[in-house]
Amino acid sequence: MAIKFFTLKNKSKQLLNKPAEETAVVKVSPVENQDIPLWLSYAGTIKAKDEIMLYAKVSGKLTQYLVKEGDKIEKGQAVALLDRDETGLEYAPVQVESAINGIIGKTFLDQGTMVTSASGGSQGTALAVILNMDEVAVKVSAPEQDIPYIKPGLSVDLIVDAYPQEVFKGEISKVSELVDVLTRTLPMEVRIKNSDHRLKSGMFARIKILAGWHKQAIALPQESVVRELADAYVFIEESGVAYKKKVILGIEEDGHIEAVQGLKSGDHVIVFGQQGLRDGIPVKVSKE
Image 1 (cartoon, rainbow, N blue to C red):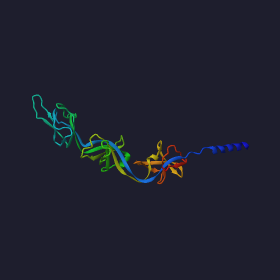
Image 2: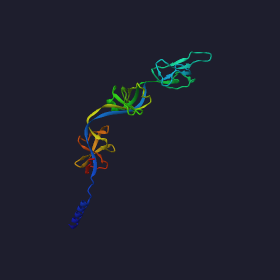
Image 3: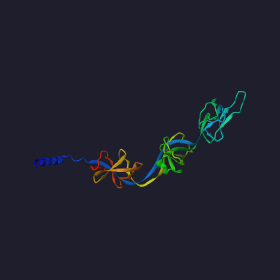
Image 4: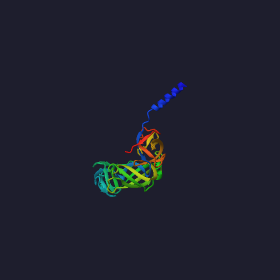
């Protein structure tokens, strides 16, 4: 009995001498109901609405360009002259005409270059590229989960690096009926008015489409989320104790994430000091 008493007495002393767990200092933020916008994001390359390569209908030597890069041009207007003269034969100069209204984007050849026409499956020699820049288009592909939201006429926001603070407005002009079986994406096209020609063919563009709203969603600050492998957690503070909660997340926007499952409005999520916390340890909420 004396030995047992001595053992119990020593265990009690160890418990009494065990240092108290240090209280962590944290900051909290209340979970609120918010309307969160559902944005779909894509990227692509800007192209002119109409963009053609100009080829000659006959072969000959390039005598001269009648226009220069950047010039406006009308359909049927002559762009270049070709000399078809052969030994012992003389021909009137051949005019190579534009097939569209637009501007001369680029000329490719030097004076005196031999130009071949398209024949026998050969594409021929390109003389110039002609663009109609009054409206531009961007072709992108939407993943399958976005398909329910995509339809012609839906408004789009377009941003380019050249004008990072400006949003260009446009709309979805075409949506394919055929999903690409290799990428499982749906091709579509957006159009943007470009009367001032500030948007250039070849520019990289980021496109955002407001597809809808998640009304009165449970919204929590992004910095409150702790990720562990494929799962997401938050710590909530209740009566001076931190509790670890697994959450199912939804859409993200403007510093907030939708909590589809795991939280309720009014919960106080820990937004600072949660790294290294454990479920059930005491915490002190900082008022700063």
